[in-house]
Image (tube, rainbow, N blue to C red; front, top):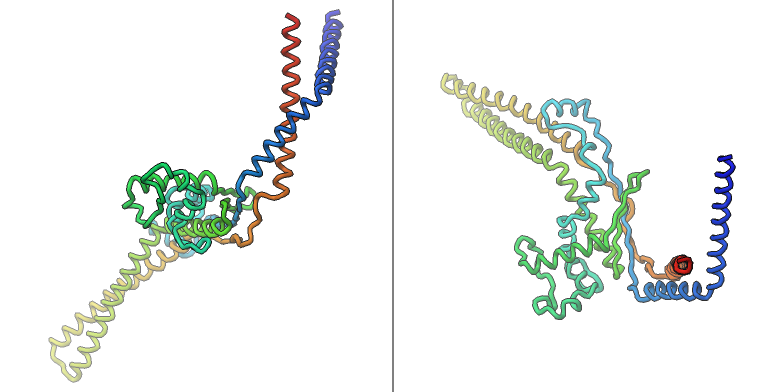
Length: 354
């Protein structure tokens, strides 16, 4: 008996739900003009927003990096590990690190103070951005910023005002015009610059890529490069000492031919001994240099550029852009109109029932 009552209650609830939906639908149909009006207003807003937005150009650069762990366990790699200067490269290299570096102030700052010719004007990218994005118009009420442009790239000597502008430009680049992503299935990295100037989008993206890869590679091999320089310097020094000892020994032999005095033989023996000692040290140093060189090569990440941006870049504002915005505005307008009509009906019904 209880089960039957539960079934009846469920049936009544479902029936009420269907009737309520039908009632809401009829309310929406009855107010079709309101739905149309709200939708048209939203569509108009999206259209005008797109129309008033400046035309932008997006450059794209793709590259990949070999971050697989180097096979340094055999041959010279094993020997390098024995001396504590070897090891695989891949464990330290990852794409996320590069993405973080790309948006850092260090890398963007280096890119900002590279020079390029944009619209016939050769200047720092920082100054190009100031002019392209009309910062002078924003700063016209600030006396100290009227006509401001960077005069040099010596960031360490910048004034507080110059540092302030540098931070503004960093935020503009990092948060607004620069973007990046990594393809999960391929590991290919894509960098994008979207700006209001085609040449600026292309040239600035190329500059940032060069600064990023150069900084990343140099930091990745910093320790190994230092070790290699030390061992190479040692080899070169010992080579010089060995050459000098060898020349001195040959000179004594030439100068003292047919002379059998013991004092000359003693000097010759000392030079021969020094030469042999230096030769042994040179052999050890040369071995360490080869190990250090192998470690340096195995630690160096291989970054392969795939595609650079080239002109012409398609403008981001096109007929397709307008169509997309109209569709988005239409969907949003219909949704908001229906939500308003249903909400108004629920409110009215609630107040009338009281």
